Every structure is written in structure tokens, then in C-alpha cells.
Length: 147
Image (cartoon, rainbow, N blue to C red; front, top):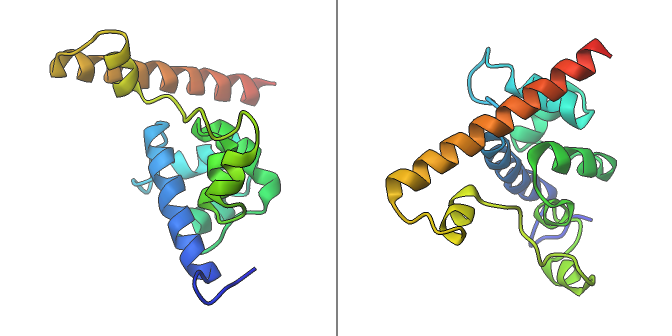
């Protein structure tokens, strides 16, 4: 599915940036060599650690069979992931009834929507939300390891 306008390497690089940003927002420490974020993301998405490393480096796009579990691990919409990977177009996503209309929740926007306006309080809300998400992820990982 390579075209002259958008060859696979450019798609893979764009997808790698998208997934890297989403992984950081989801609390995965993918930047430090010993942070364990890449390995944790691989486990949560059901992918091989080497595949996750190549994907984050913008070298490959994973098989679409991994998109659902990857989207779940990253707390993003699977349709958005398919668009970012170049598998479907934005127009195709919007054409599916009920799809593409709900982007993932952004803690900053949620804070504003519920009436938090102070920048300091918004930062506190985001920090608390991220801590709770990370705590939930850690508990989920520990439960899987003990199972």
C-alpha cells in the first residue's frame, strides 16, 4: 500500500511519533533506558518488546491485529490509531456511524469542563489523574503477573 506521496517509512515515522506521544501521556516511561516503559507497553499490548521498540523508533507499523490491544493500553481510540497508521483515512473514520466523534479524554479539558479554571488547580487535577491512571495500570500488571 505504498504510494509515492506517502511511502511506508514516512507513515511508520508518523505512527511512531503518535504512539510515543500517546505512551508518554498514558504514563509509560519509554525514554529512560531502564524505565521499563517499553517492556510494560509490550506486555500490555500483547506485543514483543522488540516490535514495540521498532514501532516507537518509527521503523515499522505493527500488524493491525495488535491495534485494539495497543489502543487499549494507550487509552486512545482504535479508529484514531488506524488513521494515524495510514490504514484508513480520516474521512473513512468519520463515515462510520458513531466513530471518530469521541476523542480520548484529555484531563486538562475535563478539568475545564467541570469548572476548574485556575492553572494551578488544572495542573493538580492532571497530576492526580495521571497518578491514578498509573496506579491502576500497575495494579493491572501485578494482577496479570500473579495470574
